[in-house]
Length: 178
Ligand code: FES
Image 1 (cartoon, rainbow, N blue to C red):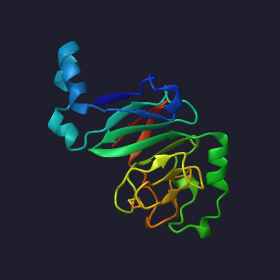
Image 2 (cartoon, rainbow, N blue to C red):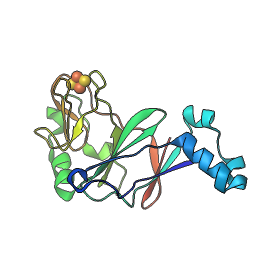
Image 3 (cartoon, rainbow, N blue to C red):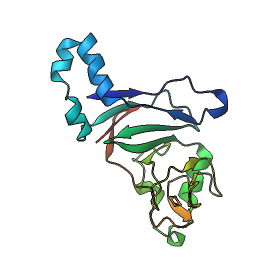
């Protein structure tokens, strides 16, 4: 099982983006070095590449931050939403959306502050920029698609919302993706 930790080493000017190298294969290598017994029980790199679950510790992710990580080679955004971002997402008229989804189906019950979505634009796959655009969610630099604080498409050519990957909370401050 690979475990990913956010580091607190982000530059203050870019604190909303911590670039996380999940390093699933590296995590297995580390386990082999430090914990030989555990390494025997861990999935090998090929298994991880094929989609083994990834554990992620949410505790270092400050409110307002967006962290990037990778699972199955796909970019994933982990966003610790502010109260205002949650309210904006919940107050949106769902019927007005291109891809109508209430915020409540895009987060886990009682965990409104955590939004976990795939991080590639649903138009042609570019990486949207966080806290940009008219809805302060993300804006894609390629053709201008705008996503809200629930990752829902609001403007531009992207046809659907940023999808939510399969994940579950394993504790109050930890998730397992996959
Ligand atoms: S790839 Fe994002 S708008 Fe085209």
